Length: 279
Image (cartoon, rainbow, N blue to C red):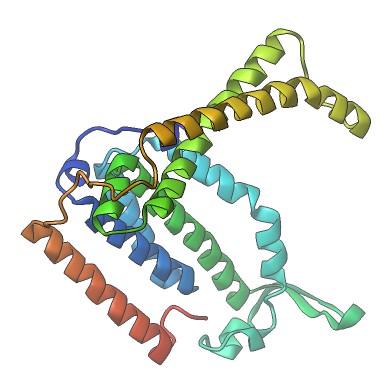
């Protein structure tokens, strides 16, 4: 995680020629639509486009291993919810007869659960869920891998976003990988001393967590004090911050923004008027 959020990739076209504001608009547009759409047929173009851009932007391939692992870990809630989607009444856009076509179903009369299992409709929902997660994760990795936090911060300042809001965002972005690194260092140091947390006994688990919790709490207190002193020395809240990024956009960025704004408007209109992307 520390290497991921602190990554500074090679200067490809997407890193050096696309303005941070443009990338922010692209990212939030895609993620917003991926959160609304349920149909895998609408999500796949977003996912494929993100993967292609990530390839040319040279986003580290190992990041996607983390993404695939996270998707694999959600297999149980995904499967559990999928088998509960066998009722064709849940689908308002798909043809009810087609959605109810069974693949592997069984009927449970207990508590009125009815028919459970895999149907064409529930399978479509499952594929859409996986594609939605993969789409959001892919575009997030693309955004993180091509946009340093300093560019995001200065762009927000240029947009006149309040300094406390930007500061909280910046600290959150940097605090997570830093604390992950600290935790890794403490864990490695304790393991060299013969420490091991693995046990199924709850009482032993609490006792064995003490060598990890104590140095972590002390380190956190030191970090909080250091951050407080640093913010005071930089005059946090004493005046307006001067951004280091100009919001003057080149013609190419304006065209890209116009394309994605048009896409967003059309997609939203189609979603609400024609149920596009819905099941």
